[in-house]
Length: 260
Image (tube, rainbow, N blue to C red; front, side, top):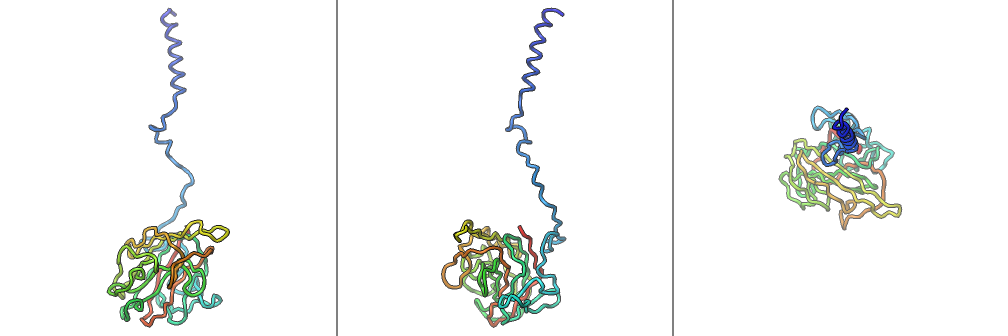
């Protein structure tokens, strides 16, 4: 071993040590921003967008209203009329609501204004979906259903409105006699122990694939007269409205929900 070799060895070891001490630069290493857990659950989608996915709760199966009860008398079953694959409001029997209570969810629901619809304004195919039923009658947070294909009314009371709160972004209604569908994302309000609002409710609404409400933050529960307001509640039923106007009754089918 000559003197040049002795000089080279320390330099070689110093270079190896520096290489071992060098750590990856986070700005250049894609692995530093990879997240591997928690792994999302596997959900099998339906064959068509309107078909219930594998984790959905079926609220109407086309045969019976076993998942619903009367709002007037919760001990009694829903009295609306079931036909071949759909059901129709039975005027005068009152609202119906789900036996199961929900907090946050994704809802799919299809409805049809009868072809022979009559009346005008709010008295033409009127109904509604209460995303959280907070009591009897029409207590809760309502998404309006109405024939506005060729029917003028106040815009915060037309189909797709958060009733008396939010005007829909579009009128995507089909003509009477055709099935229409809602896809709704509901985030229920949260309350503090003293009843004050910790986080208000919000909702996103699609009608026939068209966005009508984009994460709208609600001012409170629906009120026909006066300003909306919040009152503390927990998980709640989904409610459908028997409006009571004299026009022919509307129908529903293919209702399912996914808890979020």
